[in-house]
Length: 435
Image 1 (cartoon, rainbow, N blue to C red):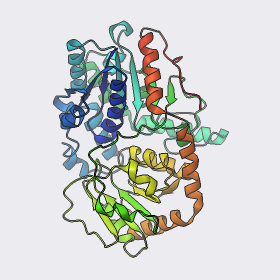
Image 2 (image 1 turned 30 degrees about the vertical axis):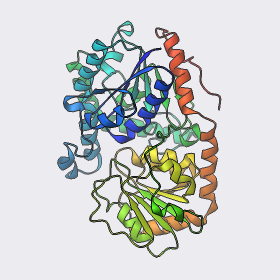
Image 3 (image 1 turned 90 degrees about the vertical axis):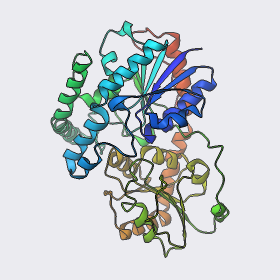
C-alpha cells in the first residue's frame, strides 16, 4: 500500500477529524504519518499511527497560545487579524521546514492537510513534478467566495449578487495585511507570491479539496470549482475507554436533555456560555449536561439539575439529547446535526460566527449572534427550540442529507483514485459519491 502524510493544525478541531481519517486509511492498509503539534503525540500514537512532531512556531500549544495576552487587548477586525497571523501565517515557514523534513526522511505518496494548514503552499506553488499530490480537507466552514453568497449570507438574486460582490471587495481590502504577511512568509520559503485572494487559495491551490459536511449545510455556489466537493461529516473515533457515568441512567426520556459545550479550544472562560447556560436552566424541568473540555472547573457553579463532566463523547450521548447549546465549533455542530439535534449557538470567535450563520440559514437552530449571551437570552432560545418543532424538523432534514454520505469511505475512494494516477494534470475526475 501507500505512504500517506496527514498535516493538521495543532488544535482539537483539526486534529480530531483528521485523526479519524488517518485511522480509517491505516485500517485499509496504508501507512499513515500524522504531522501535528507535540501536544497531540500521545493521542496520535495511541491509535497506532506514526507521529511526526511540528517544531518552532508551528508547534503551538492551543491551551496556552502565545498571543493570548495581546489578543485580549484587541477587538473586532484587529483581533481577527492577530489570530490569523499567530495561528496561520507566522507558523508557515516552520510548517514548511517540518514538511520537507518528513518528505526527506520518508517516501510520501499523498498528502492530506486540514484547512488553514499553509505549510504546503510553497510546494503547491512550485513545479508539480517535485511533489506528491495534495488534498485539502475542510474542517471549518467553507469560506470560498462565490457570486451567490457572502461570508455569512446567501442571496443569488441579481441584487444579492451585487451585494455579495461588494462584500468580497471589502473583505479583500480588509485582509490585505494578511495577504502581505503571507507573501512575505512564502518568500522566506523561496516561493512565489500567491495570485488572487489568499483565502480562496485554501480551496483552489490543492489538487482537490474535500469539505467535511453535506451540501445541505452550506450555501449553494453555482460557481464552485469542480475540485471542491462535499464528503459529509467525519465523526470522532469511538472511545473504547469511556465508561458511562452514574447519571447516564437519567437519560430515560422523562425530561428534556440539554447539552452545553464550549468545545476544547475556546473554553478558557466558561463564563462566556457554559456557566450562563447552567444558571439559565436551573429552574427548568430539564437535565443539563455540561461538557467543559478542561479539568480546571473549580469556579463553576453546578445547579442540582446539571451534570458536569470534563469529557463525554458526543456520539453515544447525542441520540439522547434534545438541544445542543454550543459556541459554534464546527465539529460539534456537524455531530449534532448528524443525529438530528437542533441547536442554540453563541459564538463570535475564530470561525464560529460563520458556523452560527449557517445554523440560522438552515433553520436548524437559533443564532444568538454573540459570544457572551445572558442567561435570559439562553433560556428563551432553549425553550423556543424545545417547543417549536420546526427546529427539530429542519435538523432532521439536514440529518437525512448527511446520511446520504459516508465520509470515510468517500475519502478512501478519492485517495485510491489519486494514488492510481498521481501525476494526472487534473484530479477533479476522481470518483465521488452521488447525493
